[in-house]
Length: 353
Image (cartoon, rainbow, N blue to C red; front, side):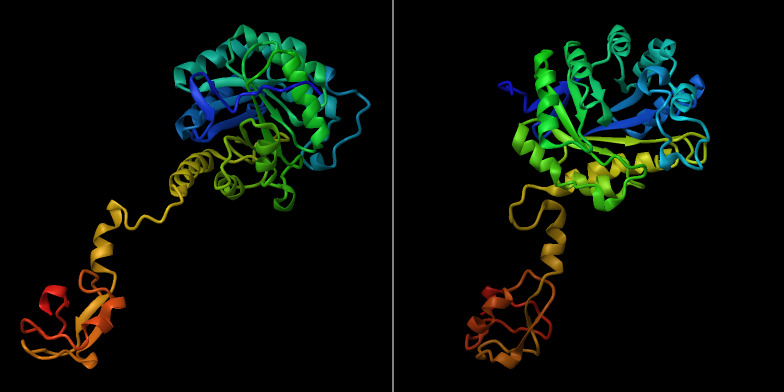
């Protein structure tokens, strides 16, 4: 195991990641373009409109990714009737699109990068100037690919679904051997869709403590509630698959979120972040000032009290609003003499007694 000197935070295209920065949201287009360049452009536009920080694709070739003798995946039954290699060949992102996708993303105002699945893809993505690379779950044990990715000299995001502690160490060591110091780790459940009971979101904190790098979630669960919960645990990055329409043909559409859900997810992440606060009990905020004054309780006259009269307990009650004598001091008022006439329902203040 090599000695590690990894950054606790870094930037992707100038946007801070980790170190208390807002969660970096990656809209994962993957192969949901269905090999239609127009759809790919539309996915980029949707991601930008939703407020995501980046839009991400996947660059692979079916023949170089899977053996032709790979058994069929059960989760694809009813979704696709082709063998794995053939299926991927039919949905892979044409590499000739890369310059156009990168340019379109730039015009849309969103960062573009991808997950490379072979050495050629690493170079092709470098040629269009991607500011980061993502290594997928299943490639985590391909230390040769990870080292090649790290040699590109930009931040590396590693998904660690299904990984053991030792496999994460091996992947980090491979990245460091390639020269990487800016690395993030994403917790992921490799099921499509992923059941809530296998998400293990608290593993994010384990990874942050163990490895000292930004951590987050690559989410395959249905809907947006699980990543919103993960936001409350302080994740630094979030990757979420999205599609234009879940009913479209293809293996990744059924568990992806649609454009309105992506917008709601980004908005929800920002709301949860804002809601976390500083953890201190400091009294009312500026926004709560009116409620603090009018909706809290204080000592109120239960009946008219004439000036010069000793105040009895039955003369007093506790009601709203809250700018009179505090309820905890009611017994200190009893026995004092009224300085002025106090009407029924008057808010009793110290200058009255």
